[in-house]
Amino acid sequence: MDPLVDAIAAGNTVILKPSAYSPNTSQLIFSMLSQCFDERLVAVVTGGRAENTTLLEQHFDYIFFTGSQAVGKEVMRQAATHLTPVTLELGGKSPCVVDQTANLRLAARRIVFGKFLNCGQTCVAPDYIYCDKTIKDKLIKEIQKQIHKQLGRQPLDNRNYGKIINEKHFKRIFSLIDPNKVVIGGSGDKDSLRIEPTVMDLVTFDDAIMKEEIFGPVLPVLTYESLDEAIHKINALPHPLALYIFTNDCHTARRITARCGFGGGCINDTIIHLATSQMGFGGFGESGMGSYHGKVGFDTFSHKKSIVDKKTWLDLPMRYQPYRQLYDKLIHQFLK
Figure 1 (cartoon, rainbow, N blue to C red):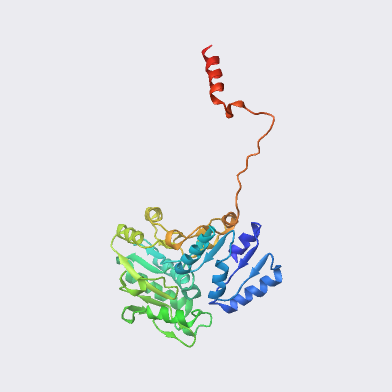
Figure 2 (cartoon, rainbow, N blue to C red):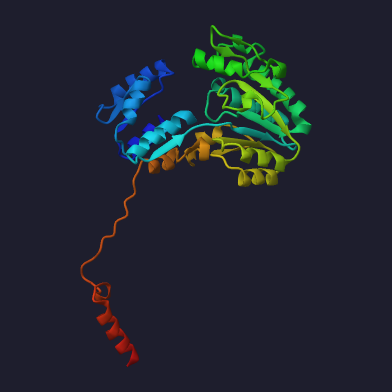
């Protein structure tokens, strides 16, 4: 709805295509917008792959897409047929760096909030914790306390705790859990498509869970021995949509934000950077291109025309041929 508002504000007509994975939400969007707008101004198209394919074959002035990297590549490929500009807001493995100076209780509280919001099914959820090895055990204990405090000791019995969007993604997420490395949670209910808030320890970058964006309530914990090591490793991976840093050392925060490539993020918090309309939100590299939110979103869906309004009362002859005759006169005048 955010990019829809931006596009309308900038004077565009819009065709909006919500996800086929959330048919109830898609139907609600269709119902609401059909009541609010003439379909010549805002039209909602529901459906799946066939509808997506047909839409991408059309010649639009602009395409905005949010979703997976795989689909983002296809959107960009189809847009190139008509040289249509795009904004891609994708995802990736967004790291959450915690150093030895961090307030671990507060860090755990905000990490649990950001990670398990909507069961981890947000594009800017902390994908994994990358912490100083000296504070790892204390941090995991604080995270466990916060899971119990925020979601209860039996989260699967908590009616306010969400579920995975469908069975396909339930199976995908659950297959990423290594029981031998689970230190918190680890169980799930296939019938209700719910997975416990799960934390995995002793994870390495070679594990299956570190090969793809999790997009679910599973939080791997990895450690580093030096900040330079952490920065080097983050930069060796595809650029994430978000990066979070928990530290009480402003120099550490500055080093990471200056040296690492990512879309946006927070210092000593998670998620909330996308909630402000005062700055743009978007990806970088593999996590997308372009941005939106607030005035930046208005600019995204606007085309700025550069126009010169030339007056007619003065017309200097030096711009016109024959140049040689003019230059000879000027040189002659100068030599006098």
